[in-house]
Length: 463
Ligand SMILES: Cc1ncc(COP(=O)(O)O)c(C=O)c1O
Image (tube, rainbow, N blue to C red; front, side, top):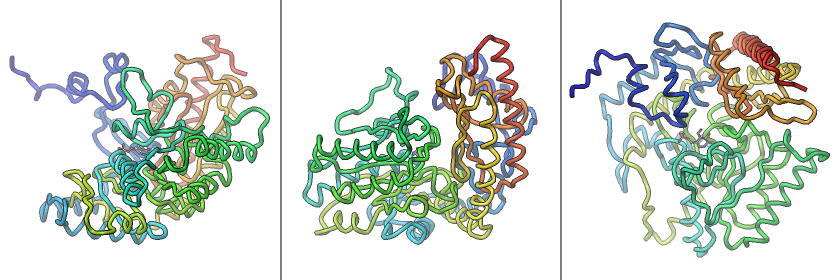
């Protein structure tokens, strides 16, 4: 049988051959995928030439915006000069060494050592395993348990999906590692127990961590991992002081604090890295990806403290037996360097802070709509949460799929927002203007109103 690929459309080929990340088999086989063919700044065009404003920023990642000639040139030049050279053991290449130096300059405190990976999952996977390496090296081989939080997302390898724990991700068909991994409650102030102030909720979460340490033993818990703002779990801004207090507990018990900044770094909330600048926390490790290259090429980085390095390197005998063929890929690292240069030159962090604050206040107005229970975010990350009753905060029944319906209507109006459970999530590029924010707010409002009317017509009660 000959396969005639050349005469089929991308839509047909995709539907016939691609298994997508987070594929939903039924709808996919029925409707296929939206084929995107071009991008410029925050705009996308599909195969039919329709234009969209991408308020999702690719997937938390197109920070400097798409279609930059300078990026394409830097990538092409590096691909021509040296498309690949591995960085195993004692070889390196120029862009990888230079980007490591730049990251050490930008990262807080003594986070001076960089291990490159292929993306966020592989950076987090390595960070979690490095906890065991470090604790073993300093004489605590049993201090390897990891503490994480519910509704966290840390990636999609076996280990990182086991450390993360979003409701929708834990399907029974897949397997997860449970031994040595503990999950604390999600610090979501909107969903705090009835009758508790935010400060009391924070005390409660801190007490939960202390109780876990008392139960399991500080001699067994080696690391705590946290996204400073839980992104895919629903833009969870923890209660005031929470992260700092969690970090202080870690300090007291020699538990390494891993800040998973795959989303929050590189300007998303106006800083190179959010942990110290926004939350007063000096992590032992930071994991990063996405905005590191603004999505132009895949790259992840685990940034480690000098203290961890010194313990691991002590005696000079050990081998750090982990790494990937494409660790320190020269073309990806060249893209990272150029990306950071552009952010610095155009002061995109300042733009993210300024427009981010307008974004937050403008979108907060959506809470006036009957369907919207909560709008929350920081900088240029934000979500809109739908509820069936604002007083009780009860979500709409599963199967109504209101957030997917909202994103479908928004898409038909030229705006891409991401549906996630009962949320619609946004993380636009850092280059956006206040005018762009007005477009997002107006279009999303119109989409929500249309879906609300449909729901009412269908007899669904909204409180
Ligand atoms: C906080 C966080 N960590 C890790 C990852 C995994 O990154 P990647 O998809 O590049 O492997 C993600 C992806 O969304 C993320 O949001």
